[in-house]
Length: 266
Image (spheres, rainbow, N blue to C red):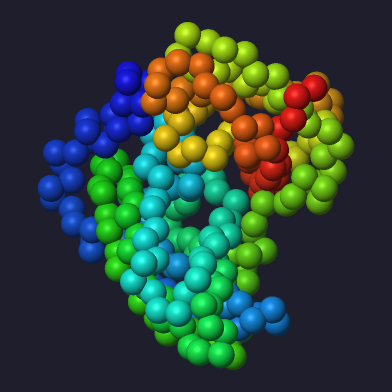
């Protein structure tokens, strides 16, 4: 489908010069073992360190990015892993918008054990894209033991402090979405009552289905009223059923981010 192929265009166009650069030149990773939480879960962290000027991508990377994927299947005594995403930055690459992190990022991961009385071994295979003037696909295999009680980690705590604010924390008083069919999918318009966050705002839309392509949104302000619109295209290339309760709207600015879960009808 034409729209989805646009996501890969910068990688393909810039792929040849990447032969002179290897993953080890620009990317290093580690699992930080962290600490046991009062509820019995464990807070750890995926730390990614990039060469100066290089960046990698958020879970919803925009038109010019590649979403990272995580495989935890090599872990031992691990029931579930939840990633807490710090607020990302917005980049422009060859006239296309992408969303991600530069230089260094730590992704806090909340780990639940199968048997809380036993230690856990956390293993992650991380596939991601890293870009500067060129873009590279990268893969890391990281492992660490999570042994209680562990120890407080300032790097993980700083990343947790950078999580997006919730709608209530940010003073969102109302949110609604109108959804209209288009030839190959849906157009969604969000109307959000929330205070200004300061500086330019970028609005990112996500659905529960990662195969749905979401266009770069347009956004405008009228006082405390923010309007944002985007188009969504499913693999079918036709209008599709959208679960409004699973739509996430994230408002990004220089002052951080606000994450709004669900977008009901007006």
